[in-house]
Image (cartoon, rainbow, N blue to C red; front, side, top):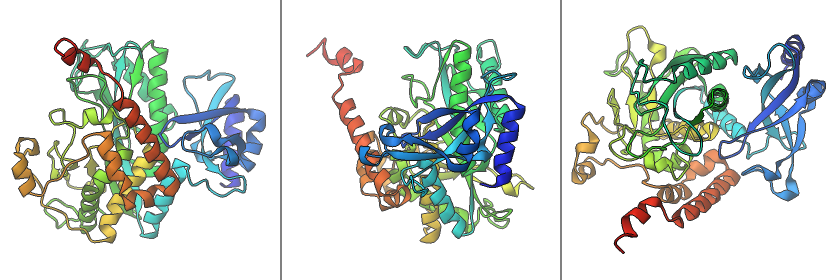
Length: 443
């Protein structure tokens, strides 16, 4: 943090009559945490950080070591557009969590991503990502009553939420977050807004901001927005398809002009790493019981460990190369959902891909047939594996993963698995409406 950065924040805050600054950080499950300071405390906060009790934050400190410091990152300073703007404005900054002695706190998801990005940087790479976050609008949080019956790319009176999307895009851009597309998705009342490709740390901050902005704008308009992966039975769930590439300086390390699909050896090994380790990182990319209701055949969500060019049923898709667009060469990882912790998810995707590069993984042949239409025997013959079918299986696979342990660090690795086991046990003990309808009349 430079003196210039601090001066910029102080000057911008004064010029915009900012009275309160919200300090944001994330727990290990990806929930945004916040506390506010007044403008009078801003200079000291930028200098020394602000102390808080970490013992009540999910996955953070135990009671006997609860003192934490939230150190604001001035490059993330922005004024919240849904708060008053003319006077008494509210600003926000993301924070890095430190121990009282000033060392990074190893359970802070932002630090975990930074640590993995530093490893990529040592190999000469910068990791860029562009996630597509899907979500639903409902009339209230109590029941999933849709606002419309629109479908993919609809622009008709059926898409009553187009004004909500417009207001959301305007708010995101006022916060300095670039937006490429916004449109109605396949499901009724389902929408997607795609943020402009950027480095993974900035994008993880942007994804956290995005989820809050979508919910705030919905609330201002009397509706409820949800990133729940599968809120409606029989309809598509919400994904977070993540486009990614590695750069070496200004050069896209994934591009090769002489390859049939314009993919470099680096890109192929990265894809091979993601394919091989995808089941191990699924617990992070799809961390809720409900996530696995989306990962079923028939609803445009990937289930099998395959890659292809263009084909949208595969786990990894390679968008077609457009001449002169070398920098846009990328791969798309289609299993994550928008209810994940983006810091941990991006860290895991990167770690899996780097593992392929470091260990020279060989890329399996591309599958250009519809994998869902193959028989189990055909898939077995082609060596096509699949993602975990439920949270329990994801936990079992994750527990044995050295890659996941190394990526998250021992403490977060054990805490996350423990947390997910508790969630599974609670879910397993529930008697569902389906069971009542199915069994009560006949048993």
